[in-house]
Amino acid sequence: MAFELRRGYTRMPHVYQQPPLKASRELYVGNDPTATVYIMESSGGMVSGDRNDITVKLSPDSRVRLVQQSALKIYPSHTGDTCHFTIEVDLAERSRLEWMPEVLIPFVDAKFQVDTTLRVASDATVLWGEIVAPGREKRGEIFDYQSFRSNFKIFVDDELIAFDSLHFAPRDVALGSMGVLEGAMYVGSIWLVSPNAKDVDVRALQETLRVEEGLKAGMTRLEGNAIHCRWLAVNQWTMQEEMKRVYALLADMV
Image (cartoon, rainbow, N blue to C red; front, side, top):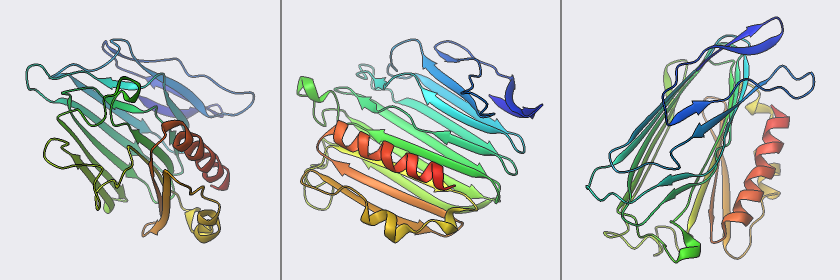
């Protein structure tokens, strides 16, 4: 997907897609020039050996909001092959991208790897979220998948400012043990990169974070005008609502 600013509104003049991935048309709220595009996975989920690739390019001054239509389901790997999901994002000068996906759910015996790379101009803004579930909790599937691996990188003007790697192999390590997830089941993150991030009072915002039994959160400032917030939770909906609240606050601040 390639976005450009045309006559005051962000348009998507170039899009190449193949089933099962599909992007909607640009949608707009009132007079807001931000283009909202829904990303759909028509197959219902990824099966062993599947590969999804998403590339997003924002031209100067464009503003985009990407929304996943539903949770991403990773089905059992009966062949032993890993599902791969690659996301490449390139933000040009003064552009802005918001991405708040639905939860990622690895089923029993699933094997999944996601590689996300954000390349951001120093005066561009990106607000990015992610949520990982332990499995289909309501069916009693808690950490029954084979492996989950996530490599997340942020470059600002070609300088690497963040590299976050998660590797969960429940059959090798007890994920609920001390020093790992310590009883939590859901992992959530929000990343903000913006020239205006320096004006965000991280300490004041952190004091508003909802912390209680079964919900832990922390926020930190990174070099390169970036902020990262991570949650560990027992309940998906409690964490998701709190993440949406913080996400909205950050969106308004920058």
